[in-house]
Each structure stands twice: as structure tokens, then as C-alpha cells.
Length: 199
View (cartoon, rainbow, N blue to C red):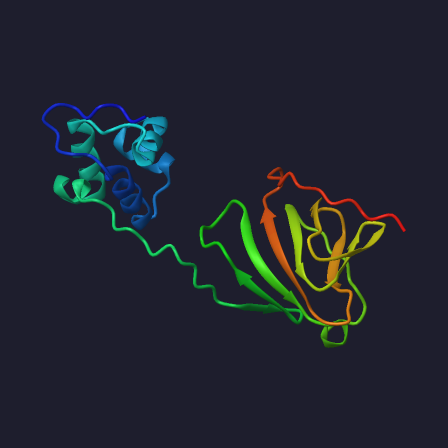
């Protein structure tokens, strides 16, 4: 719960969102803003999240840092359109549709994996990189090469893995496959694990 607003200060509902909007517009990190204003980084974080209301001196200091009138800080942040309108990305014959728009952290994509004959590269080339990945098959059949494993995944199956392990995936045919994929920095894991079905 946010702390009570100081006496004599107008309604501060929504001021946190406005502070965050102004900081991002000025291309500042919380650490940079803390160094500029002398306000503790943890306090700035709580102010932007709405868990704490700013005092009058903090409002004056932040307004000076952003070079705006104090009234500008008290104006509620505009509500953004929550709909994501992705621009499709084509890579190695696959179509990736971003489902998230915030930089950093976990990124979500819907991926359309073409039928095997339509792939640009006939021979699977496993790759590795930093991060963690979770994939869920929405339609079709997906072939996943992961280290020494060669798996065929069907609708409703999910897998998660460290992307430092050499990997590749493509449609197992006969048609395309659709996949929901989450990519995260190393250490950010999604706790759903699919096991290969026994044959």
C-alpha cells in the first residue's frame, strides 16, 4: 500500500506513472536520476511504482531535474493502448510475431515454422547463445534438436532449455507448425517442463 499523501499536497494518484514516463522520455536510468537529484534509488523506485507518495521537496527536486513545472508531475500519466501491434520479422524462412514490446526481460513471440520443404536451410544447424527459452506447440509438429536429443513435439507439448546448449527447431511436417516462444536472459526460467514421450 502506498504511504499517505503529505498534508497540503494535491491528489497524487497516478503521479508514479507520470514520473516513470518523464524519466523514460529523458532517457535516464534510476541510478542516473538518483545521482542527479540526491534522492535514493530505492525511494525513486517506490515513487514510480506508486508504493510511496512524493513529498513536496521531492516534487520540486524532480521537476527541476526534468525541467518541467511541478504541475506537470501531478498530471496523471496517459493510459497507453494495451494492444500489441507487432511488426512481423522473417528469419530463416520463419515468421516471428513479437507479443511483448518492453525491452529487456522475458520476450514473447508467436512463431510460424514453415513446412520442411519451405525452409531455406535443408541441413539443421544447431546454434547456442546466452539466455533461456521456453517453447509451446500451438499447431503442427515441431522437431527440436537440443544437444544430443532429437525430439518431436506435438500440440500442447512444451519444452524449456538453456540456450547455451546447441539447439535448432523446425517443422516435423508435413505442414507448418505454430509455436509460442518465450526468450529470457540467462537465469530467468519458466517452470514448465515437457519430457519426451517414450516410444
